[in-house]
Image 1 (cartoon, rainbow, N blue to C red):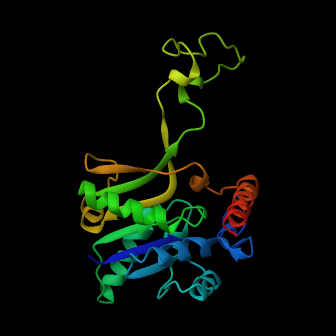
Image 2 (cartoon, rainbow, N blue to C red):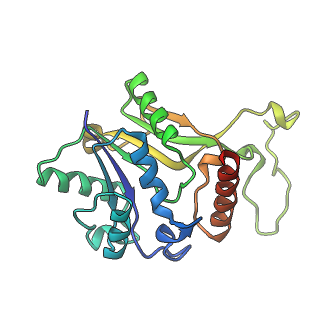
Length: 232
């Protein structure tokens, strides 16, 4: 099995300017995903998919491979991550390199560890799965949420099925964006990571922080400093 990890890091983020290279505890954000991929020891190639020459040079400083850049079309707001991933696979094939699995590690999940990556791969093998997707338990049950009418009236807001203490409600999980693993033939043929042979890899809330804005960034910085102090 030949495995490739891809860190998608296009430039031009609107929520948090240049977040993929923003300094987090002394390193550009993308560096944490590159290092976790390398430390896992699973990959024949750790590639950063970007449209920026500056981002590419930053990635190379942390030992990622960037032999080509994304096209302008694949860097637009309408292009999907999976469109960009198929482009990466085909570009490597043109260079004579073929892979069996693709792992997408978004740079906005800096607290995901190399142990998480290894465990997710182990689950792929144990389940003989087509895909593995990282999830974490939701902070609050969606049963406590609802839409609101224009006047803000709460009549019927709490659904009838929500009875008894909160602790007795079923656990709900959300996709955390930290890890996606898919077998490449399946991705090219089907593209659906959530089918009958797709499985969830459950991660802790701490490792599931997904940076989208300044508050998320500050939270990640605090958690990372706490982790460093704990292991120092």
